[in-house]
View 1: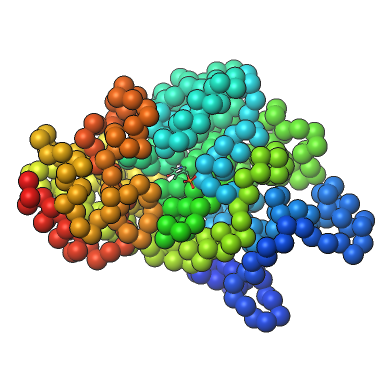
View 2: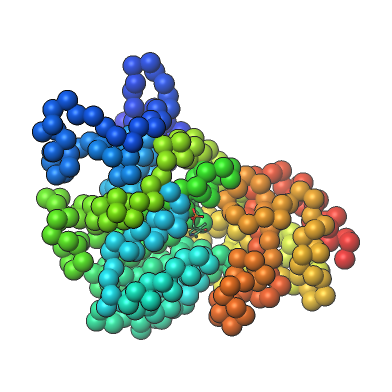
Length: 412
Ligand SMILES: *Cc1c(COP(=O)(O)O)cnc(C)c1O
């Protein structure tokens, strides 16, 4: 049988992983923190990595392992480690792989909290160059002798810049640099990490995977492309027999076990239920986003719409060629004189809320909320206008969303 498509695998993943005696189709969620061994030697062997198994709930559990298998399979990677939040996945991965004196090339268009965490990395002695990742020339120009990695998102939030992923991936591979991509905005099948030569995929599972705003989680997946023997920071203890597993082993030990931001069994279960409809929700949200972007662009009270699906978007062709969808984040500027908060208060269906990747359509004023801490100069550098509104488009009936904007715009 040929390998089933990603949607089929998402729906059937739990059932394929476990075949419990009672026929339960969901992975059982255990609340046990400890695991008993009949033979003490087995406990010793699991501790020493000679046998597979669980010893303590902070490091691993059956529920977490099941979700990790599903995500690795979806991404086409070799192994996944799950964390309590997307930020935990990002911070734990970076803190376990990099050390003072290393240099990283990072996107200047990043999720606000990731950007803020990078300040902490700098304080710890890790050198960073912030570059415009839509330009491969800028990425290349930032290379130093101590460069270890390149880090970017696929589609940035809120301005929707699209990184030149294919070019960066190819160059990173030539340079033997770790290529880390946060693909939260474009979960599979919208982003093919393997084809883009990504080494590590980082994802907030809180967004599209969970999908319903009721669970937090994060993941890092090793795509199996990177030669860890060329990476100086892997501790001897984690240089295991299978060289492809060096990175994820260190991330699991240093990042998950030592830093301790573990995903709970209940959260792992909620996320795996969310994954069953991920492709359907993503397709629907993306379709709605395209229609809404086109509608908003035609409105005289809207000055500008930012959405990669629009042909006037600066990276429209990059997105079309490199991604399997334009995502469901769109932003817009109202014409001067319409106050963003007042406008958002007139929307009845659309929720004024932070968060994204939800079934519901959400909107918020960017400069005064999620990028407030960055200050006006940094916002300008990221392309964020002071009156920008960001939307995460949900799965509602398109006509209802358009009608909501129609009635709100009519008030101004
Ligand atoms: C939300 C988000 C994160 C952080 O995820 P949490 O699960 O909220 O911690 C990281 N990166 C991107 C692109 C995000 O949108």
